[in-house]
Length: 512
Image 1 (tube, one colour):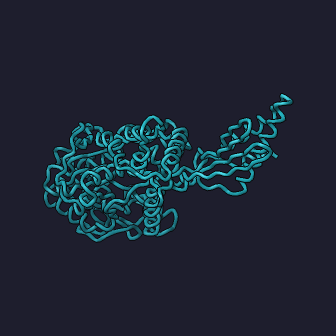
Image 2 (tube, helix red, strand yellow):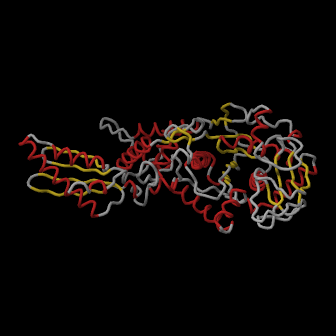
């Protein structure tokens, strides 16, 4: 089966036919590095990580090149430096590493190239010069002592230099990718201010810098690049004038990707920048847009460390599972229930495959949905089928084991689950009954001891209650354990306690 991908440019699902099967090339827009990556930033990383895996599996790892950039020159970064008093380079280096660490926790492979915008300033200057020489761009002299509000200027010195601007009307196909009307595009372009624009839709290629801001010498004076030019310059340098796939979030379709197409095609003299354009939809939290004002905003690191409304540490594998459980072209809603369900599913899968040798036949179970426009939700459903434990049928757990790792749910040496899903247990016997304690990941010994004591207390209290018909204390113990995130199972000769992912031992303190 041929890989089929939905092409935003043509608004149709197409067979993927690379320009060169020995050199398949993909570019995905990366983050602006001034803060921690939030959950919405993670979705395109995980989505295109699966596509990268699919391309490598199909064409060979040595025949695929994946580029994802870092924007490390931007007014948001300048503002953060001015507010914090820290050096810009210090901020970008720190937040770049944060991003890499957080995405690694989600199981994302590192791209083949991760260029920083500041490494490609000469190429940007060359491309801007070509656009002006060919008549697609123009420069405007700035003489004002009252610079636009977009600039973060500590000493408010005059900006004496030139803006370079792309003239949108010179590119007839502008707007084809997003399909927006002229009025919609004018409204969307209003945020980018610059003096001397010939049209409201013209966008900045180069802008002047004051001494306190990052700047490079250029034919238009000391300045820095606009946002859009960096991706055109870096993709050209690393992938060529035209390449196979350009991806990113739907929010980048206009104006960012529209502007990339215009400046790349005009500078390179090509009909297209990329053959296939792919965009993932946006993300919500509990049915609402994620925002700090609504109190539902959190970063990937917040989830990993338990600093979110759910209150429990969410393993990276769980975040990845939730992100992949919705097709990339559909809006995704992060909910605490989805996270909990994903945690339980993965725990079951890791329990079933602990120590199992992988069988490459597992690829054929997930192959069809993945090749059908990267249907990761369909692939996960196929994995549910592999996990069915039916003694009447041959075991497909070796296939599940292979599919899990292929989809980015790793195992450690010896085919053991990662520490978050490694199961531990202890038991203690007393007067003909047993208390079994089962948990995953790490748990402090004092909490293990406390749970064991409560298990014995529960059994003996229940034994007395059966005779007195007063289950008040039994109900209190069980409800307190439940509130602390402990699953309780009691039988005539056994108590089983299993702390879940949201286990909070502090809630047991009320049981004296």
